[in-house]
Image 1 (cartoon, rainbow, N blue to C red):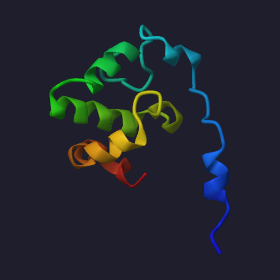
Image 2: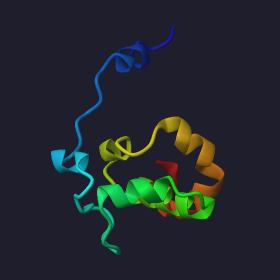
Image 3: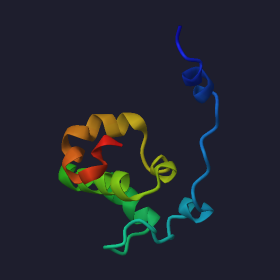
Image 4: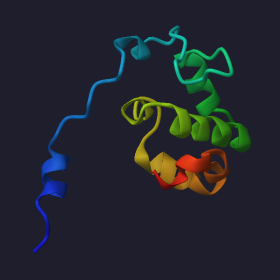
Length: 96
């Protein structure tokens, strides 16, 4: 018998962001402690035509941000597709 929780989770709304300010492009990100990056700046970097730059910033997002905030910027399919390039930037958090 299959557990019922996957079906239950599919119908649950996502958790809200850790701060509603993350919905504003001019908000400075709490998880980019090494660089002064805004929400809009991260979106631009994640949309860069340079695959290595996209991979670096996606890895930083996955490594540093609260997991509920990650999904404000990317979708699971994007992470899955980029994983071969991103994995090297995730560090010890790769298993998560």
